[in-house]
Structure formats: structure tokens, C-alpha cells
Amino acid sequence: MSTAARRRLMRDFKRMKEDAPPGVSASPLPDNVMVWNAMIIGPAETPYEDGTFRLLLEFDEEYPINRPHVKFLSEMFHPNVYANGEICLDILQNRWTPTYDVASILTSIQSLFNDPNPASPANVEAATLFKDHKSQYIKRVKETVEKSWEDDMDDMEDDSDEEEGEEEGSDGDGSV
Image 1 (cartoon, rainbow, N blue to C red):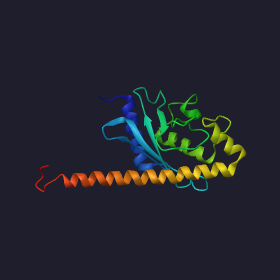
Image 2 (cartoon, one colour):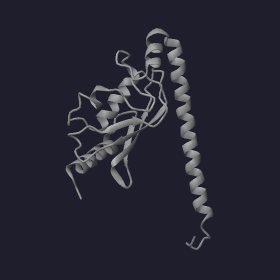
Image 3 (tube, rainbow, N blue to C red):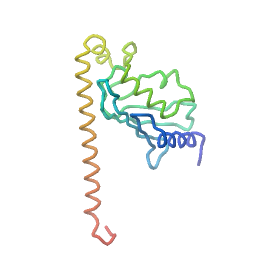
Image 4 (tube, rainbow, N blue to C red):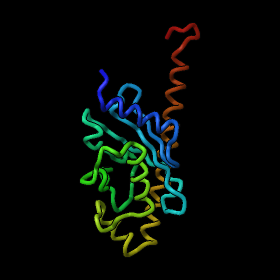
């Protein structure tokens, strides 16, 4: 059944495929257009540079009237990200409007890497280090970036193991 939300999400997906903003990617799950996986690459000249940060976006049938639920799946050390991955960002709370799409949501989150808002902290430790001990903050962020690479390597190894298992399960005549 096609709903306005699903049609809008398919338009958002088409835009992401044809004209994704730099450093972000997203696509719906193969069997559920209402749930998306996304990735943001840490912007150059920030402590997050080249990190690969995974997110989950969940939409309801009232999207774009209702905002999506967005959270980091990757570990994140940032003043505006809670320990559970939830993001403190005005457009995901009280400033949401239906004009925002997946691309604009992800670029807004990406902009937090350039310009954290320690005045509205979700992570008090990160906000304090950002304001008062910048070198310690940068060190912690760089550790998070390295962890994002390790997580990506683990994901690639898991994918490789699954593919090998599929190949081993076949006896060459198409039967398993």
C-alpha cells in the first residue's frame, strides 16, 4: 500500500542516489522503506575527519509531518549526542518542518561535527572537555574515529564470513 510517507521517502531515496550531499549516504532497508541505514563521514579539518559513523533513521506513516527518529549506531563522543546515540539537534525536536528531507537531516547532523553546541549538551563530559580542555576533547574524538574504522573492518569481515558460508553451503549443482 502506497502512502504519502512512503512516496516521500522514495523521493528522498532517489535524491540520495542521484545527488547525495558530500560525506553522507543513506538508503532504506531492502524490505522496509520506513527504516533507513545512513553513514556520515567526518568532515575534513575537524577532529572527526574521515571517521565513518553509522546512523539509523526510523519514519512513521505521518512523515514528513512528523520528524523521524534518528540515532547513531556507531559509538560517538560529541557534546550533542547522548550515550545511547540519540541526537540533540533542534531540527529533530522543536524546529522540525516537513521541508526537511533525509539529505538535509544528515547534513544538519554532519554540521554538528564542525560546530558542536556545548550550551545544549547531551553529553556533559564531551561539552566540558570541548569548552575547557580542547586537547583532551580532540584526543577522545580521535579515539572514537579510530573505533569507527575498527567497527567498519569488523562489519566487512562479518560480510566476508557470511559470503564464504554461503559458498561452502553449495555443492555446485544449485542445491544446498
